[in-house]
Length: 55
Image (cartoon, rainbow, N blue to C red; front, side):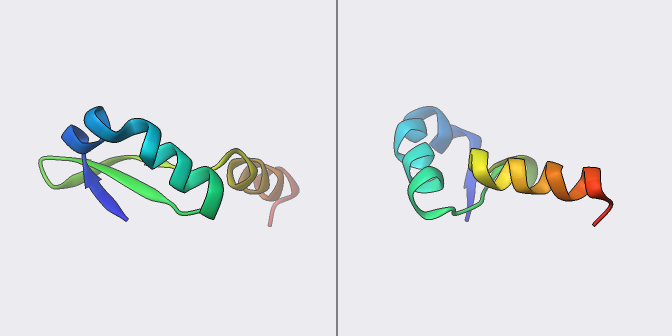
């Protein structure tokens, strides 16, 4: 899901709950370009673990 930064300001808690509960990845955009990505802690840990193993 891609959302503008203004939406994040207004709906942060709802977006955070979506990420935590469903594992959805949310791209946060400014001027139509993704600036940051919101992922769950579990997803982050999996990514960093895989990177450390060289996967």
